[in-house]
Image (cartoon, rainbow over all chains, first blue to last red; front, side, top):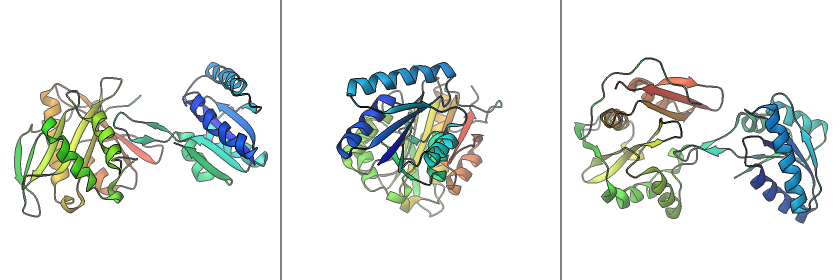
Length: 122
Length: 174
């Protein structure tokens, strides 16, 4: 299966990578990681990209790492369609101090607009 | 960063308070303390799944206890609504990283739509005012009309509405 994992600068990219890579290894999935800024600045994306590459090296798992510019939700959906991906995987949001789940704008857009299956990581 | 209205809201009544709800039940709203903990666990075990919002309250008892540990305590102003000795509603404020407080409120299904929620929120804001808190915010699912109306009627203003949830805020008078 062709997987596209989207991670923003504000997401816990490490946890998302570990969750996806362990499944991808078992299922022999082909993985691309798309990195975007979200609320962050461009330099944040560079940092996240570098961390993702290092983390993939540590996990000894080969995957493409791409940068997504502009509005992350719509760009992820576009990338998933044009790249013929079977599944889009995105972090499932953060928790408020009260413990309420808060979806990112990108996650909301992907859930409402993706044509592929979507996995929300919790 | 959470936004807040520029204008302050009026005065809110502090706990304890007694009133008769629209179903003619005698209700006490009072400050909660640690002795209420097990009764709160019991209330959340009875909580109706369709009244859960944004992942809380958790449904399993261990989850309920972990969550209550995180959202109760001396730094979290809390009030409960009591009918015939049983806790039927719970409202609390949890501090965020910016010196503001997130509000949430829960009322057992059999006690909803009788005015208890409104009085819980008003009394909690009275307690907050007494403790000198100024900025209070909450999020609510867009389609939860009853809750949105309640918060508006108490004085909350919508501060962010780009997603599936509304964010609302209130600035309390010092």
